Image 1 (spheres, rainbow, N blue to C red):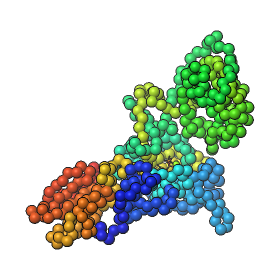
Image 2 (cartoon, protein in one colour):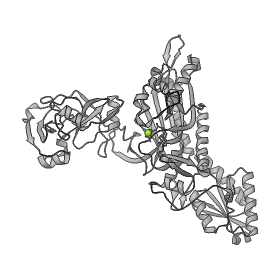
Image 3 (cartoon, rainbow, N blue to C red):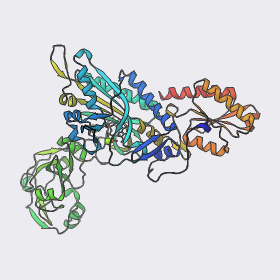
Length: 574
Ligand code: ATP
Ligand code: MG
């Protein structure tokens, strides 16, 4: 392309909502523009990057044996009612009615649509396994859209769905996708890691998230320093402590203490001169309309994702003051397990606590020396708390490391969740009707592009890996009024295009400095500078954006150098 003809509005201005570097640079480099909250237009440069990422995804999905389809974005409520998610999905699902007053939604994901498609056309084991994918616009009404196209409402996702005859087959499909994802993110030039993850709204039994390592990532990750255990902190397991023998003779008598206005753990500790390890936190949650009291040691935090998955509920939220009053007969801040009127679930951190401080279920009172068994019953213990730095690896007990990451892909083992709910069955070899075993696999296309910027930039702008760069080479004649410079630049431009290289010729009548700044900002991997001093010797300069190295070469050499360099880079990533 000729720069003078391009719609490429670069600039210095940074929108006030742009908190992270990829958002700032995508705006400044003229890649994206915000239409309204969480909804973006892709300009030509941004769209080229998106298409590159899509193409890599497509090639690797095809290589793995998946077949591309294109499913509707508008979906009827009936399908979602069949799977049960019409109720479960919550406000992220954008619902509306058509003119016949039929309820519909804009697809945030396509398990229902694909399961419906496959159940109607796949009848026997001979038609399985199958893996179908699409690259399509999803809509999710995110509570807090932010970070540009990293977390927006309307975004392009590749989603694939596998259907197998049994768990063993599904395991193979999962492995193939896992492998394809590793290839995709390597080819996109990303430093990433796969971690065990929570299955959230999609459900199913097991999942891995592909995380791009970046300090600005929204996800906290934990890794073992010795074995290969890695998990999202939302999911990371904490081992159950060994239960110590209980010596009831060491139980002190219960003591009710007046604790006026003392509500938080810190306040309780200060007032009673105890440590958080002596105190039981009792949190009341509303779980699908029923209250549940959750107990955890005072120095630990409840992990809501783990709690949600343990309870297997559709909705989970902290109880309102009214509900707290109903189950504790007191206002917020004094809840405790003794005589509470709700189900009690306790975290493992509670297993060995004795003589502890609990809320008295009475305004302005706490109780000292509460003991399980003698004073109250707990029948449900589970791993419900957040992992922390001082915990050890749940697999091998070695020390843990923490980091931050951006989730770019997610692979799920769905089992028969959707096939059972929606009766997606096939006839096996013996003529028996069985449920298909499913998997689903998503990649955020825009988020992957943005994540690449988070890992590859400097003070001057973006540094694209060649594989997803919008163009591979920028040719910069330093002064277009100089006929000789322009002729050489044009010759290089044609020559490189003939060899299949993607080139921008900066034919604008601008100062060289302005042109150099723009080339760096938009992150083109190679820049050829055509200037009078070098050209007098028949040479041009080729600068490599990522290393800053400069080669001084003749026009013919430059052409060859570029073709070889681009090819080598593409190979190195793939
Ligand atoms: P998150 O935890 O970030 O909300 P998710 O678990 O809801 O993600 P999935 O349902 O697994 O995401 O979707 C698959 C992929 O789609 C994600 O790995 C991510 O790359 C992308 N994605 C999800 N939500 C968004 C969004 N709001 N904006 C852009 N990309 C998204
Ligand atoms: Mg989400």
